[in-house]
Amino acid sequence: MSGMITDPTFDAGPDPAAPAEVVALDNVSVVYPGGGAALDSVTFALSPGSFTFVTGGSGAGKTTLLNVIGFAMPINSGRLRVLGHDPMALPRTERAALRRQIGMVFQDFRLLDHLSVLENVALPLRVDGVAESKRRAQASELLEWVGLGDRLDALPQTLSGGQKQRVAIARAVIGRPQLLLADEPTGSIDDEIGMRVIRLFQALHSEGTTVVIATHNNHLVRSLQYPVLHLAGGQVQSIGVLRGTEV
Amino acid sequence: MRRHFQIFQSDAASRYLPWLLVLAVFLATVATAGLLAAERTLVQWRTAVPTILTVQLPPSDNAAQDEDRADALVRRLRAEPGIASVERIPKESVSRLLKPWLGDDFDASALPLPPVLHVELQQDSTTTADDISRLATGVAANAIVDNHREWRERLVNYVSWLRLGIAGGLILVIVVTGLTALFLTLSRMAIHHQAITLLHQLGASDRFVVRGLVRQAGISAMISAVLGFALALGLLVVLTAASRELDETFLPVLRLDALDWVWLALVPLGFVIFTVLVAARTASFQLRRMP
Image 1 (tube, each protein chain N blue to C red):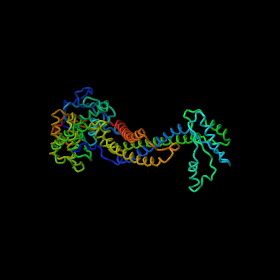
Image 2: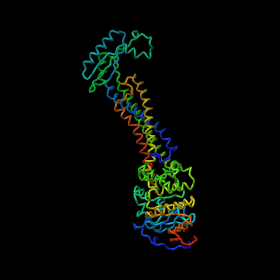
Image 3: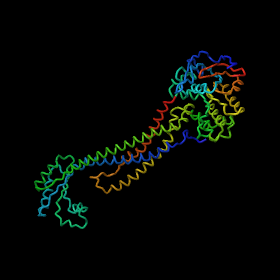
Image 4: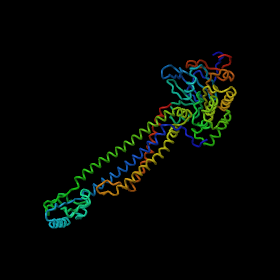
């Protein structure tokens, strides 16, 4: 990856016990059930309020890395700390509470087909026990913002790929998470909506949310000048800010 | 937005459980009523029947002498301590007992019917059937004492086994219901695996997911239990009415008192709670295996 410079927000040798880090991976490896490393001795840490892109080719381990950070996937070795905790060492109820501080945008959207757009977006609030009127108001406002104000009662199967992605994004950010993990959030949407989504992420970032975005979109990465963690073959190849014109 | 939208969509597995529960509650209610009836019958037989004996004086050629002997035996037995009552069974009653075999047209007076005595011992009596037999043969050498105890013991044994059989059937219904709830829950969790994973990722506690899985099942289980109970009650009412014509001293009569109805009412409630608990425990156990 050319044009990369080291960024001070990344620690070369993370101390997983330090609460100052939102995410800390220390020699984390994930092995596929059939063998082969999805992540191979990955070590890095993210400071609170950082905004990071994760780049790499197909199969580089971007989605696996996000799943590991969101503890949706167990690790085979190494140490993981998220928001100051080792998630797998927490009791299940506390682990669930920790998850509520993390917003995730999945590449495959993962919308519940039998729920309306509004109900899908409001789901994290319902999980968190927020009153029905309040979650309806917040979900409506957010859907208006992502340009789906006229599709509140639509079912996901009636939406285009881009619309589904916007619903998934709205669902990820509605709980104002401390950590936002987005897997190709602009992959299925046009540039204009894509920029609106990024502005939404930036707005959250400005309020202190740590944002991690896995993307193929080099134009986006270059234009925003945020730190980049580049993966290849499940290993961290470089960490820094992309300033050049080539990747 | 619907106020309480279903987190998990209805599926084939969840539609099957209510019908199974209708059948299970029906069978369990009828079986419980059978158990209660069997218990009541056993109690009756163990208390009332052992004190009853029948004494027959085989007829001779001299009917007047037979009558005198019977009257003498009645007097003798009434004088004996430990005997609650001694009654001559009227000839009309004996004739009526023979009617099913001899038909309506026979003339009872033309038959040499034996005088029959109904002897009832006091509950705490130390007098035995052998004592009565000795007294009877003292008055009429060929007197026959029919001791109810022997055939009663056989009936008690039979009903005891019948009760065990019903209890076994009831346990089988409970086990089948539990296993069905368990496997249906596993099926539902497989069907909704993606939604469950998503909910976990959104920070839903296991309790939230379990509630989502079990809530609808619980509501339909309640409706099913009421339906199964109502069907069972219909059958029990018919059986109760039919059994009113039986002699409840000797035959198992289905008659339920207030406490029995309380027990029966607990059957559907118990099944709903049991089914929901099995489903909830199964779901909790499975969820704990997820990251």
